[in-house]
Length: 377
Image (cartoon, rainbow, N blue to C red; front, side, top):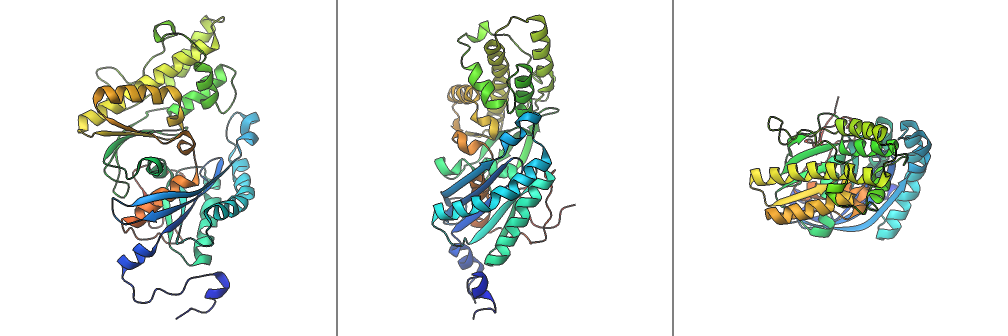
């Protein structure tokens, strides 16, 4: 039986008497929207199978960035980001559907938090409207969980692992049993995130915003051994410090003082010394956590995971510790809709129920909350 008005909005016929398991197996195409900061992302993925062994294949990954509009302000301006999402989302959606060869997905998902309040509202409102118009389930998921899921496109189902999640606003060590199970936070930064430190030091060096990639590129021109670079402090590495906690506020101050006392220093040397300090702390603590927990896989995810020195040092230290290292390719480390589609696909495969359409966005959503199933705040 077809409901009145179904043809007008392209809603599929009612599922009749199919079981929940049959409905879940019929769901194959997941479309997801990401608008937590300054990237407008639409990703489309194909889900194969159910349970922890489900496979996820990327069909489309469209990203429109408004970063150029924020450069002169030295950081993201929330109002500008929200307006940019409004302008970019429709075209990105059309490009993604065309690239995937899809007219209507089986599931719509969106980032519900954490992120900028206005930016999140744009994506959530659009995703809810699409889900309602198409008559398909809606999943409200955690942006940070999406970063963890991005790796499955290249390396397949994610085994139990310790995850180092590093981005502009977040630095966490996590114990992940599976993408569909609750995440356990082992530790996080007590002040600045690693990505914030990159942006602040880049400004000190006159490199502008955003600082991550340009500082990484500059550091790679240093040409010096680690012993010849400036040495900057490694926060939270004392014997009495929490072994899984991070601190990056002190390194910015240390770099500023070094530049004042060494006005003729080479920017590339300073960049390399700073980068070595950050990568050293991140990888040591991540490898220690995996070893302590007896977990054989380390996952590194988030925007800072694209950093070349972090990837090199993690590869070296995981090999020495006998750990398997998983890092997404750089494009999938930064914000995108594909990662949200991957995370939502795993929730669907695990049989997680959809989120209600009246679910609220949550700019401060904690990393341990993977899916939002009801009203927040």
